[in-house]
Length: 97
Image (cartoon, rainbow, N blue to C red):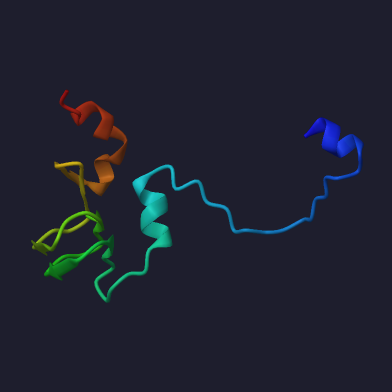
């Protein structure tokens, strides 16, 4: 980039993209649309009697959840995570090699 900038071929334009790191589940939850019970998710999810959950099951054909309150549910590469949202910071401790 330095040679292009020196030749006057680099331009910048200030912009606000509403940046969010999405570095944790709480950030993802904040960005998702929620149903009337506060559940947000990515994927084909059917919530029954669930409240304030964040679910990411993009690769699953269908997921049905019942009776969960304040949980994280994620499925990726054949691995399933079910964790209390309040314990999000401990997820790395739960990993099984």
